[in-house]
Image (cartoon, rainbow, N blue to C red):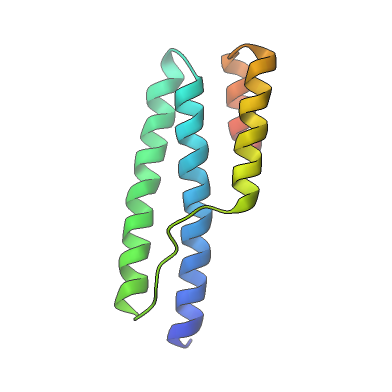
Length: 100
């Protein structure tokens, strides 16, 4: 594989992983009780993965992605809107995180 192909593939993984970081951060913020630290931990783990992927893109001479996708932003907006309706119901939050 060429560096360009590797960089493109890694940047796609970075974008997807950033999507999950934002989703788990939102879920941690919207949840109460036992799920808050679980979701925050997932977000932290994924941030570490993003950092390693970005380092590899730089090593290959590329510019790493640093933003999540538009689709993820739309999903987070829907999740926030849904939370207004369901009044921060933990079961609904977990179901929405699983769906996302």
